Image (tube, rainbow, N blue to C red; front, top):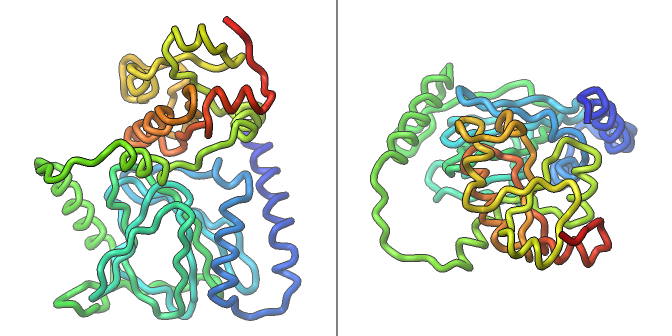
Length: 316
């Protein structure tokens, strides 16, 4: 879909969603209302196409501002962090759309914020939000009243000490994280495939066959068949799907690979993977996210579910 069309769709969706909100004369949103706003906004269309990944710093953009609240999108590469901060007089809420974030509070154990999870907080609430995983993450944030001030802190002996600039702290966190992931990993306990599959799917915004069909039809999404040749010959195929067998998938879609396909132009490419029944595809999509392809996902139920939904197929 052309950017102008995406922009138009996004603006129309945004206007419809917030029309009722703007008509209400409420100076401040409650935490419950803010949680509902980020949850519902994350489900709207158009805004995801605006997201960009930045290696040097977090990408963020204000998507909406009204009289009593604003909405932001933030993209996090592995290791990126806010540092400890509050939001002045603004209360807030955020939801993770894809990936996993970690919230840190002085004196508390870190909290993993998984896709679909919402964190809501009042004014003067201080925290540090990090992407400590190996894959990119995207989140939606809302503040009421609209965000005007952020106070930044250093954590010393369990206490937050105000500071003037966050850049040095964020850079230090980045360095610490990158140094940590370079250390050899000592495997203590083996994990089963069910655990690996569940962890992979927790990071994905999996698509139903119908949603995948519409995504390919209306956007630049790439539908990828990773089944082996014998399976495709036995079951059939999906017209227009790109065939890239599982054993070479990462090399074909890594934008930094010399063996990449022409369609693998950058890390913003939306890759929708499917296999026979939707198991191997989840692990494959997670592997693509590990390469930085943050929009990679898979089809629930795979080719069998696609065919059962009455969507186009053909026999080889």
